[in-house]
Length: 156
Image (cartoon, rainbow, N blue to C red; front, side, top):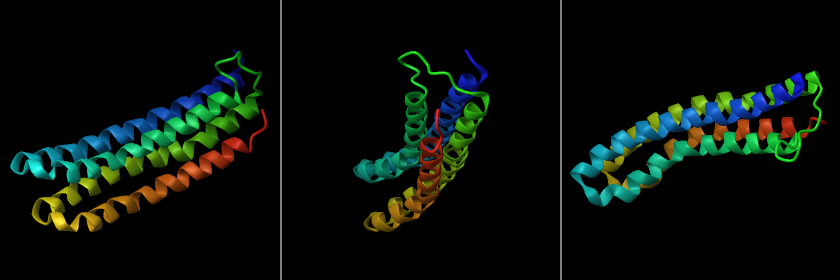
């Protein structure tokens, strides 16, 4: 395996792993709050589940970029040769979704946990609670777009 191929595979792995870790932490944080609310009022399960699920999207974004990279280097059909510089560019292109995905999912989990507190006392305010949590998502979507454009702009 060429060094460029190693860098490209590392880019795919970093995108999936870091964004996935962030999502796992964010979903866990929100889930802990949701469990407390549902213990007191089981009817709030649906509302809290929606907020808990939001930080999971960053992991999906990282996985999407990982799949795009794997397709670009044809990892499943006999990898194409990748120059060292190209592999490094692919690795760097994966970093926006990896790093922003990690951090935004953690912070979105914290916001979602606070919003679950809103639902505990005022369930009719679900729309406002979702809005607070979704605003954090904006930066994950921007990072996904950046990584997508960067990866697709690289010729292998």
